[in-house]
Length: 133
Image (cartoon, rainbow, N blue to C red; front, top):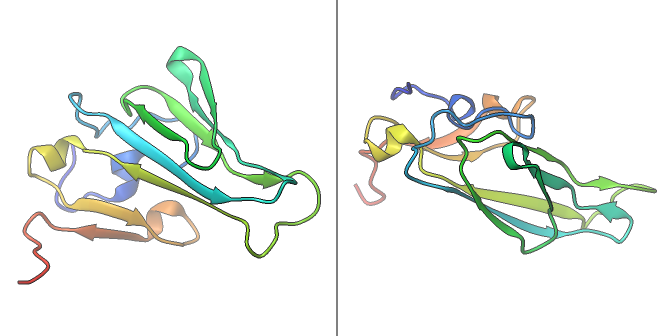
């Protein structure tokens, strides 16, 4: 069960590793979008829905809707030969409604920022936050 002090990592689990997002609301879905520009020597990575044994190649423009309450995982983009070019990137945008957000008892986890561990830096908003207040 989440709280106002809840962290993004407890809300969505371990990035990439096999996990279930136990804080998700059972009546909603997670939507994941892939935006990338990768050289031909790079593999875009994969997303796995482990309960139903589905593997999705994460090419640019792929959108996936799934329940975070089922086991899922992912692999990052890698260069198969050589090094990444300065213009190679892959961005994964994840939109989801956690149980505590739907019920109005938690902060809004908005984004994970760069850090030594994914859960160490996050951008979040309180339900009381308004942009012009």
